[in-house]
Length: 200
Image (cartoon, rainbow, N blue to C red; front, side, top):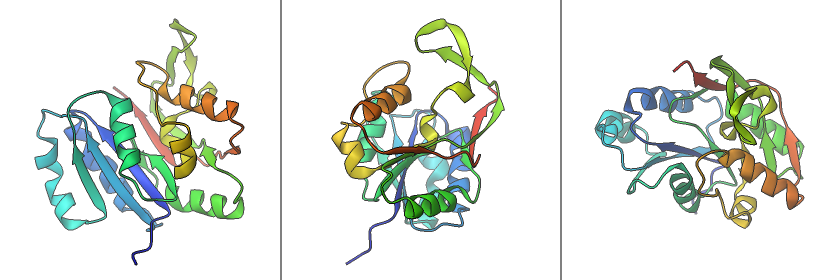
């Protein structure tokens, strides 16, 4: 029987072929190797599949799923259902991981086996402010937000939360708050190994 991976890394993408290879290469450079990568293409029209095909052929742990365009929540939920890892984590298709990202989280989770939802630890490149979910006409600093790319959530826990809600703004915040209300055991890590690209 094939051992199930520690991590399922979900990469939802839509017309980001120019950036996706950088994200995937950062995943492939991880010092931790116990993972599967699930690319969910949300109906891209920019030849995404053709541009990453050499990586898909070379690295069988990368899976590519194409679906009709329905938005990021639907894409992530599709990936969740197709995952097999103990924990599910995320990599936005225009971001990247420091090589130690998965290893440091695995070490933390092994040392803290009661934690089902780990978050935090990012380096921001570019604009550090985003619209406030409670008042979109104002902006708040990303240090005051939860960033979904940093989430590591036990797969069964994420399924019990019914994944992501279909909404235009605040998907990560909504999932985080629903987990808190369910008293999911959570922890924050501040090691900044998730590289959040906001230059554009």
